[in-house]
Length: 200
Image (tube, rainbow, N blue to C red; front, side, top):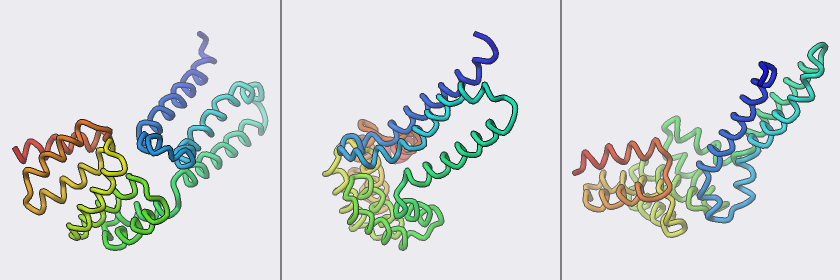
């Protein structure tokens, strides 16, 4: 393999890694058969795939403005697809939650649940309600998420955090153990294990 093939191989690996990462983070959408939502999440991956495929043809135009135009066009497409891949209301609610305005985040996630009653949206709503110290409502939202998708670990994790704050250690331990048995992102898995060690 010549040095000219290295960029093509690297881009191919980035595309494959991106696809696997996107699917791993959105398996709940596949379980819910929310194909439109799942397809949206894959938009940046699709753009990267087209970019990788077109690289072979663009390399023939090493001189001139073709490469520059190619870079600008795909740069714009990557940014646009990233923005469109997450619904605007969810993106806004996520931003508000990260800034620490949990009351507003709970309101926005509540609207998101009305629009798209997916397990993940109920779980996000439960997290915002819990952070707002609306514990009973948080438990109800997380329980609804579990009812919709018993394999969605983040719902168990969020509910466990609220149960721990309410002093219900036994139920929190049960939820954390269940969260570790099902589909949950790695960073939350580590946090769940650490909390379990503290509680036991």
